[in-house]
Amino acid sequence: MRGLGVGRWALALLLACSSVPNAPPAAFCPTSAAPEVLSVAQYAALEPLDGCVVFPANGSTTDTVEYLLVPQAATGTPDLTMSFMLAGSAAAAAAPAFTVGSQLVPSPRSPAQRFHDRLRELERTGAYPALPAGPVLPSAPVAPRPTGPVAVGDTGRFKVLNTLTGFSVDNVTAVARNVGQHIAIFVDTAAPKTNGFSSSDLDALRSVFDTVLYPTDTSAFGREPDIDGNGVVIVLLTSTVNRMVSASQCGSSGYVAGFFFGGDIDPRFRTAYNNGEIFYALVPDSLGTLSCPHKASDVKLLIPGTFVHEFQHMISYNQHVLVRRTSAEELWLNEGLSHYAEERGGRAFLPDTVTFCRYARGDLSDAVLYWGNLGSHPLVDTSGVGGLAERGAGWLFVRYLADQYAQGAGGGLAGQDAFTRKLDNTALTGAANVAAQTNDMFAAVLGRWALAQWVSDLPGFTAPAALTYTSWAFRTGFPKVSGRCGSSLAFALVALAGAPASVSVSGTLRAGTGAVYQRVLQAPGGSAFQILFSDGAGAQLRETVMPRLNVIRIR
Image (cartoon, rainbow, N blue to C red; front, side, top):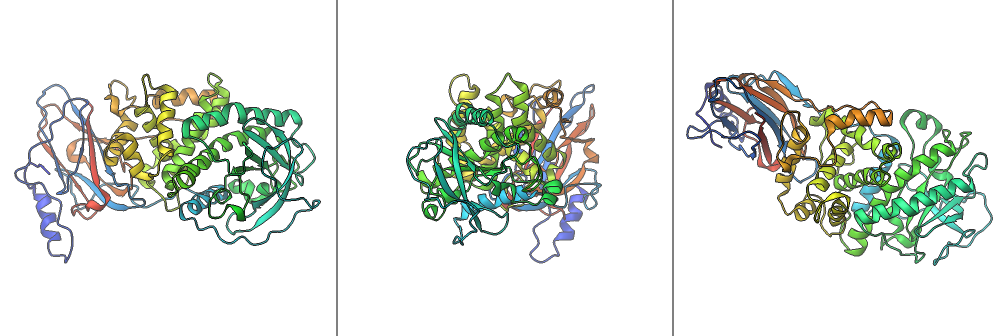
């Protein structure tokens, strides 16, 4: 990397590391290096493998120059990490003064999140176990569910997963209570009879699934299969979903609202399960006879948002595994797309902002969690430890992609749908999928996304078009959303600020994420300066994590 000369502190690091066997060389500034000259709003993703970035002197005697620095692991390989350090030219590199996200702090995961991640991992690995016999719930003997068109009053038997961690099922008998063009709602015959769904409730659910959410998801992601030949997706409302968590768990750490299970449609295993397209969801239980109480009015509002999320998973699994006979999408991108599906579902109801809030509020809350400690949360994650903050990162990334790469004249929702369909309708997965659909290097897309989160709607600054969200102005939008949605939401991304000599920050680079946002303020007439970008010990960063220092000049 270009530099201005070897400072005394860099030379000391070089001497200190040279005696350690097999240690990477120390980070340093080559004597022949030239400064990185940027005009206002110009940006770059630098690869300082030797460790040094040099900035020119401030030629103005009246104006301060401001740079934003965002160190990032631009790898598409999941779960890679490496320590890092940024040190200004007059800082004591061996003793950083500020640490950001130096220890992994996984987002706490509720039972529903752990279960959800487990289902996605089963899709990726195809490791569906042999199905043991499950207990038969009290009901009259019923023949297996027939294939072909579904009519109101039809009865069928379903095998429903009944545990968050093991692999056993309940054999559930259910009756088709409402059938539309794309959706058939079956209700468990063992569901509580007191204060359950009325016929008008089921009409409302069928209508929102059938006329809004189904066409929205299929427009944005593609089609589900129809392996059972009935022309509909079954929405199975069953007591088994309620019972997956105890009342005490439900009160302290949440519950399962609904899910899609890939084994039902996997070509290798579906005949052992339900051999059809099914979305499972809980039933109203106002008295709490199954687990914690759920009023019918609450369930009616809850499960549509869960459906639009899980239906994306079903479509993705169909397009990757059934249509193209390849692997299921990687966990991080699959989740990002499903959280995008929630917001996309909400946008189908605009200008009804109350309904929009019900669908999008969770995504915004997750983004706030991510911004609040982003150095601890990877974007590119398939380890199954991702929580709400990681889901916030996934939504933010897919939201940025849809805004930037909307297909067709005028962009808008139709153009965004055309782009997200490409992400699902492919044999590619993960970073390779993003690179192919954007026609750009994954690392380059990541770098622009990292900068966009800060500069997209930065007051007093006109961001380059490539560094913007077109669907959100987060700084101004969050207060409006908070007021309309009744939630406390605020733009939570914080950037450290200081003179070049005071830059001294360390932490961990995690796959895909910008580890810290550092503003560097160069006083009028300020001299040229160096920023050392190294690992936590002052050695050169390893290329395995694809270290990048994203830089933009703000003023």
